[in-house]
Length: 223
Image (tube, rainbow, N blue to C red; front, side):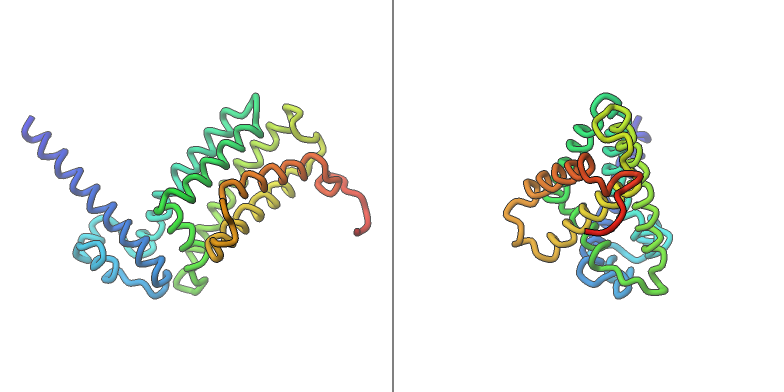
């Protein structure tokens, strides 16, 4: 029993150290950007040795990816659950998931800092090509889930049968991340970003329902 208790203490200590390193990585990457950040700087902020970082992470790239995954995993799980539960009410499930993500964006400093790093603090240099691929992979996984949810909504009659789902997903993705990027750069523009996001979300679904230019065979010509 004493041996198991000691093992549990050691596991908790290791987990606490790992989280301290991830917390420090968020702060340093957010302050200096990816390319200018060194593991020595992260170790100093975390109050650990460089060796402790290598005990938990292979290198700076691995640490960065794990920092992102720490906040992305609950987001992905929430969206996966919404898609799985959306057979009877897909749009309502997406609305609740959207509210949850915005709640995290406003109230969870870890999530907000990682998003700010990804959107504003990552230079697409030769050293950071993995970050661009990381962003592409994340976008593809989220887009696939959104596409499934919208296809469910079409089957349930909540969206038009001839909706161009690929176009709709592109618009939803661009609108959401454009709004988030704008908010991070100019937070004072939004009196209540969550309320603004709800209105934008509803307006987007009005477009999906009624715009002829979001159909599989849109009208010809321009405005």
